[in-house]
Image (cartoon, rainbow, N blue to C red; front, side):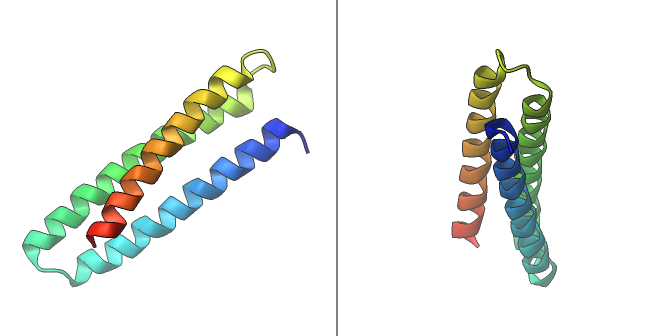
Length: 94
């Protein structure tokens, strides 16, 4: 397995982890009162937006030439950091 494929697999695992956190937050939102439910859904939407952005960067990684790969990787890492921060904020709040 190439370094590029291994890295893309790692990012896909992080995306799946974020999706699991979204599922957990959705379950908690279903049990919350109306005001809290709105807050949950706001955080869920933010996580999903960041997840989608990271997925697009991973797709770019998979399509990148070896010359462009490092630049695309930097964008994927930035997207991952943003997603991780979003998940951490939501997890610590709820």
